[in-house]
Length: 390
Image (cartoon, rainbow, N blue to C red; front, side):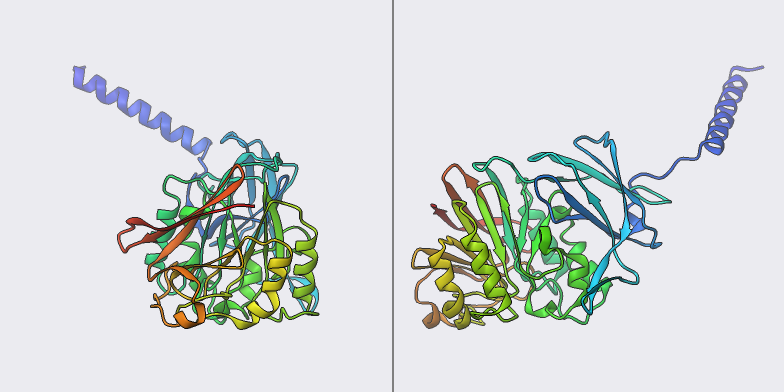
């Protein structure tokens, strides 16, 4: 037999051997993200627990492998997520799937992936909250990402460049209206935000555009015992974050007002941050929100809130009133607004008509704000900076 004939015989043998192995031991596809309508993401993170949510194309539940390395080592089953209807928890048809991760270690990066019957997602990560009250970390803020998923993707990709955010505060208006279906949520939020969703978690407040949407409470959770509420708070090292649904009643005596007063009175952390969709102070298209100035600002001043983040106006603006820094970051993708109501906000420090996000670096004894403008090509430019002291 010739040398070429020997080579062909050897190659044929190995090909048949490989085919036999694949027949006896079929491989499960890994990293088949196309099997997910909504890729896995994280909610409700604290020092010892977190929730993983996803939606598969075939509506199978699946399970989560997780651990401090890509060896994983722990497993949690996915279950259909229940939502509150008429005061009772009920399963949602075509729902997302939720898996609860418990017994986690504080200040630890966890890897996770979701296993379906047909495939397994790519590896994704998040970090648990620190136990150290003086921990240093970075978080991000932006809002109003609706309508332009291409620009939203540029903002999300730019914001994670060179940064490992502990969490993201989203100031609302993720989709155009409360009536849109899951496909619009996927197109306008989940897909463009994925550069962030695969490495961290979002704390989200309702904007006016999705205020009446039942999908909001399906996709997002409050923290701790407030999982099913629009108002909640959490601690991350020296920072206490609290949010209300500013579309709803927050006047004195209301449920939200009473929650906020109890919450702020009960925290002694050096930094207190408020997140709401509507800005107390703005010189943008919509302008300032008088009700917030009248009802919430006194609470902010009484209990030492240093930072108030909002969206609603599609721009970047920083205002200082009575020692409190008010920041509007509504440049996540929605059509930009020019400055219009400067007389309403004469104490405005910086205004920029730009797509933007805010990088918040929590360091020893201070918070450093850096506002970045992002253009259509994803190029980042610093447009503002400030230092906040306790």
